[in-house]
Amino acid sequence: MNSQELIIAYSKNPSNKIILENASIRYKETNRICADIVEVFLVLKEDTLVEFWFDGYMSIIATSCTSITWEILIWWKIDEILKLNEAFIHENIGDDISPRRRFASLLWLLAIKNAIHEWRKDGIKEDFSDIVI
Image (cartoon, rainbow, N blue to C red):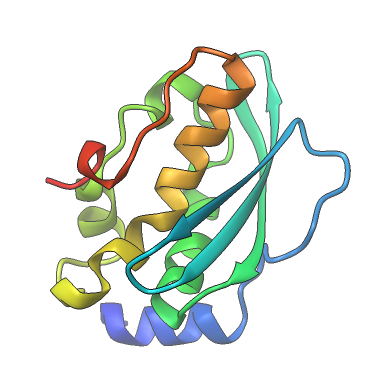
């Protein structure tokens, strides 16, 4: 399956799009460029991501990238997630995402990283310039 087929498939049936009431942290991120809004619901245990759910008003690319990556990130250490950047999208989804949709494909990552920072209360807030390569 090529990346376009993968994106379409996951956007039609995102398996982790649900509001989770008992999340360790919930965090909303907005992409001002295209008006996508994602809210992530994370369950964190010590230094590990145990659950990852999301909701929001998003484009096909934002929805699919968010849904695809949850399957990969479950049980990852928080410090490893905080090191991720755009290369993660290229490696796991493909590098043929158009420049126009670039930030939409990264919105979930920005939301997760900022949710973790807020949960840690470390005073860090990342933006797209921190994750693009």
